[in-house]
Length: 89
Image (tube, rainbow, N blue to C red; front, side, top):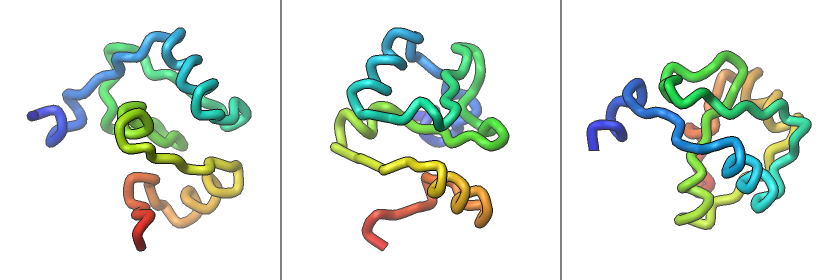
């Protein structure tokens, strides 16, 4: 449970193969300059100009976001992280 409180102790568990499967399954555009973090790289602090996502959210919550270049530019301009956006307003 501590990992959910302290993201600096949470690490990437995806392999490149699983990462590719997730991109394909959820039709995530590759032109968004996607990066799979190294297994020893903590989730927080977030990489500069990158959005961190948990694949479990897609799998268990049926959560979908239409990521476009426009959306990422809007979020960057307003200095808002995707985790701060609530689909319910």
